[in-house]
Image 1 (tube, rainbow, N blue to C red):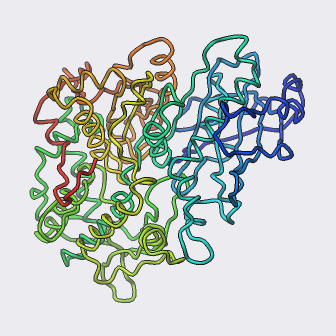
Image 2: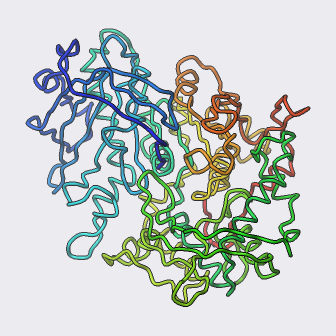
Image 3: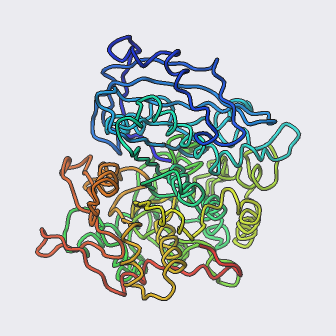
Length: 588
């Protein structure tokens, strides 16, 4: 999912005013038991119940939340499925009864983890808004690991399908259903109010989990916040190794300094296209249309000696990096072959017939893993992926190894792996069902956002899903009319300059959303439509500034360098829409 940048967590279990409810006896007495409250076939292990009080628990410098200090009761227990060899542990942070606001918040994970752990900022953030807040371990420790990729293969080399479905959507849905029932009992909600509002929030893997819940457990939620979802799983996982394979296919290996120089030049050239010069490219659509990379031909580049690190998994809190390598000092001029490679990367992964296999990153985002220096041959080469490659070795071919030999791998091989993954995981990990009618019909609200400079999950992939929902649900309406209907309950926001679920060192004056849960609460509980959402600048000269983010398909433009408007025009929209022509079947 995302990293909690420089987050500090402090908390000591104590016994204080929460003692009347934060005991194992009380929690055991309010555990849900009715078949109407918990999923069929589940048995809660009452002997596993724990309860601990935390007071003055502080979270600071979290990317997605303002600083906070909270009091809560940490509750955990295990359950299993009838006739199954599993054991799933759930944990809930219950607010002080005086601050409980009739809310439940489900949270998700990061990378290959299904939760952010007991110190996660999302858990604390939920409590700060008066929500009982929960997460699940997915049952993975029972199978001998903590991360999904630890347990996806059973000891006999076959797929661990219970773990796959738990990861895909089931474990979080169960945690939410059990958690809502527990919350009702714990706070005696039935005698105080007729409504317990239920929410989900997550980014990256957590964003995929958010979308999975809207698709596969719509009845459980009133509002869902999905950030940069890695939801088109088969494409997304392979796309992490697309850049080095595209470079290998082109047969030319630009030095790393070339990529760095081009990105910096692109940011400088496109900064003012949004009407404001502030170091933030808020209109990557205009940048794609109007900045010609070929103008960099013959430009000089120079980088000091340093080091590079493979991005590994490429996104998430637990980013699994492969290795570091020393790079020599680099000096030269950008060649026609360099330009050709960069232009290929900027237009996405294509098969040998030129059909688009997956979306590119936006021009100012970067290119993912590119080239590294081989000190043995004293030449530039591509990375050999570790946790990126394990998608192929483990998840497709059931080999308990992470290293993938990239020698001879082609664009067509990547396409074949994508199709294989789509076929294998269409009902579990390929989180792209476009018919959200059940979620919409029960009054659900979906707030979907994505950093425009994301170099891990292309933001145009989020736009593509939003478009898929629009076309499936409102096929008779025009683009404008369909989006107007969709915006009643599903809104998408491109966050200018933001990286993957994180602030962006390359564009430090760019804001990042910290108020999404507050926006969602107002939208669900007070019907205050988030026409724009807030994004807080968390570094750089403008730290603390709160910026406004437009609802797609409108984009920001500053008049006279200081007044922002949200404008919409057809050419800007078309620059963000890509047709995946490499597939026979629809890819939503």
